[in-house]
Amino acid sequence: MTRLLSVASECVPLVKTGGLADVVGALPGALAPLGVEMRTLLPGYPAVMKAVTDGRKVADWPDLFGGPARLIEGALGDHVLYALDAPHLYDREGAIYLGPDGKDWPDNPQRFAALSRVAALIGADGVGGWVPQVLHLHDWQAGLAPTYLRHLGADGRVGTLITIHNIAFQGLAPEKMLNELHLRPGDFTQDGVEYWGQISALKAALVHADAISTVSPTYAQELMTPDFGMGLDGVIRARAADVTGILNGIDTDIWTPPYKTIRGKARHRKALRAEMGLPDWPGPVCVVISRLTEQKGLDLLLDALPALVDRGGQLALLGSGDAKLEAAFKEAAAHPGVAVRIGYDEGLARRLIAGGDAILVPSRFEPCGLTQLYGLRFGTLPLVGLTGGLADTVINASPAALAAKCATGLQFHPVTLQALAGALMRLCELYEDRPLWERMAKNAMDTPVGWEASAPAYAALYEKLTKSS
Ligand code: ADP
Ligand code: GLC
Image (cartoon, rainbow, N blue to C red):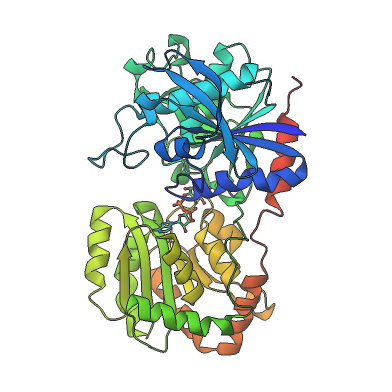
C-alpha cells in the first residue's frame, strides 16, 4: 500500500468550481484498486465541515494564520477526508475563492498557505499515526507545501508531486506578505518563490516539488513554451526531466448514456429542444457546458453563431462567469436557434450531453477538459480547438481518419473565428451523412474515457516518488 495525501481546494461532491473538483474527487476511488491509499485534505468550508460532523479531531493549532484551527478526520465516500477547520479562513458564505463583491478574497494567500502548511506538517510527522509517503498537491492552493517541508527539514521524508490543472492561476501575493505567509527572506529568490517581484505559490511548487505533472501530455509540452507557459515556461523547462502529462478520466458511473447507440438520442433531443425552447430544425443540436472565460474561446463562438444557425444548426449553452460574455450570450438567445441558460446546473448539464448531437469546446488553451470526454462517452461528438487535452482525446475527422474509420470528432486550428466557423460548417455537413455520423458516434462511445490508463500512470509515479518513512 502506498500512502498518499491529496491536497486541494475543491473536491466533488462537496465543493466545485471546475474540473479540478471532479479529478480530486475521483482519484481516491481510481487508485484504491491499485494499492494506493489516498486520503484527501480540504479547507473546512461550510460544505466540507457539514460532511464531517461525525468526524474526530486529530490535531489542533492555537494560531494558524491568525486564528485557532483543528483537523477533523471524516469520510469521503469510502475514503478518509481531512477537513481543516479554521473558521477565520474558511467559514464564509458564498463562492470559495470570491467575496460578495465578485473579487478574490483579499486573504486568499493566507487561506491557502494555511492549507499548504498543514499538508507539510502531515507530510513531516503524519497525523493520528498515519504517515503519508507522498503528497499530491493540486494547483497553487497547495503550492507552498514543499517549501514549508524544507523549512521543517522534512523534504527527505515525503515525496511531493505538484499537478498543474491550470497555469492561469499562479497564487500571487505581494513581497511584503513574506513574513505573514511564514516564508523566509531566503525563499524570495529567482530559484525560489519570487516571481517578477511577487510571491507565487505555484512557482514555489514548481521549483521545490519532487515532480511536476499536468493533466494531458500535449499540455505538458505546451507549458514549456512562451505561448502557453504564462511566464512560467522557463521554470518548467528547467525541470523538463521531472514533468509528465497524465490525462484526466471521468466518472463513468455518473456519466453513463441512457442509450446504447445514438439512435436512442432522439427522445432526449426532443426533450432537450422542448426544455430549451429550440426549434426542430434539421441541423445538429450543439451544446456547451462551460465556465465563461477567455480561456474557453466562447467569444469566437458568439461570432460564429450566425453561420451555424443559417445552416440549420442550433446551440444550447449552459454556463456562467464573465459578465460581458453572459450578457452577450443572453442577447444572442433572441435568435430562435440559440438557447442560453446562465448558471450552474448539474442536471441540465447531463440533459444537454444526452440530448445534444455535438459538444463545442473552442478553447484557446485547455489543460485537459472534461466535457469533451462526456461528449465522447455519449456519442455527442466533440468539436474542439486543437490544443492541450482536446488534442489528445479527440480524433479529428480528417480524410485519413475517415478512411481508417476511426474519427471521433472535429478539431480546428488555429483557434480563430474563421477556423471555428469552418469547422462548424464541416460539422453540419458530416451530420447530414447519417451512416458516417453514426459510425463516428460509435467510435466516440467506444473510446475509453475513464481512469483505466491514467490511474496506473499515477500509481507508477507515486511509487517512484515514495520515500521510505
Ligand atoms: P474547467 O475545469 O476549466 O472549468 P473542465 O472541462 O475540466 O473545465 O471541467 C468543467 C467541469 O465543470 C465539468 O464537469 C463541467 O460539466 C462542469 N461545468 C462547467 N460549467 C457548468 C455549469 N454551468 N453547470 C454545470 N456544470 C458545469
Ligand atoms: C482545469 C482545466 C481543465 C482540466 C481541469 C481538471 O480547470 O482548465 O482543462 O480538465 O482543470 O484537471
